[in-house]
Length: 330
Image 1: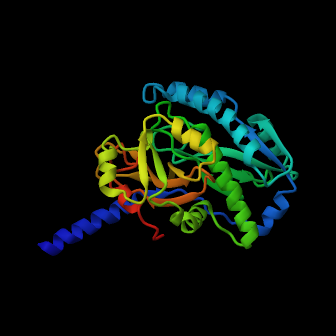
Image 2: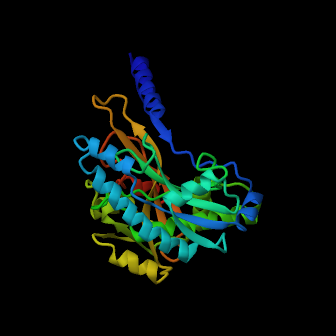
């Protein structure tokens, strides 16, 4: 009987694993390709309202009442913040231009070979446009027009934002992910190797983990914490540094703006979808890496892989996650 129970438990875990689909950020691009891409003009896609997308979302309004609102809000948020982040941090290309989705489409159709594109795509869903539906995440892709997004040169996941009050990324999310992409590409060129975004996150953590110690402060954005977690619960597990749970982001934003070497903060990076095979009503969840970042450099210092479970707060930081966030054993 005991063996049967163990077999059933093992089968259950295997079934859970089979229903987790990891986001693919792997790249085939050789490091030498980036040396030629930097001679091209970077085209940053500026999103436009798509009439087909609006019609489809309006048709689905009963099942997705916030669909149109979320779609339009994402376009506005993305267009404002990606331009600022690229202008501030992008180093690969000397020439940078901003073009609408319609203009980008024409360049892809014309197989333009003088440019390289930076665009957002949605992963985890089935639509060709960004819906922000439950169970989806956003990926930034760098690609050549003659190859399109089907064969990107680089891919990186945007920080997860569905749990925020407006379900939108904040400005520092864009700064973080653009800097991460720039540093990742520079690392590949310097080391003459290929390293995808998840691998590079681990590389940074291995180099930086020791920088967070008891003299430093970790600021935890309350919106990223599970509703079941609080500072007393965190204190039970976390001892690597001082910490504060921030109900607003003022201290975090100020630490980043001032390049504060004594302060660290957290982001959530989606890495997989997860569907519980035992749910009566099938629901897709997003699993995230829980990541500690330096406010000074925006480099990854520590990360851990979020555990799969069927719960609305699965993407968020759990109290017990801080037990693993004490460690540097990557």
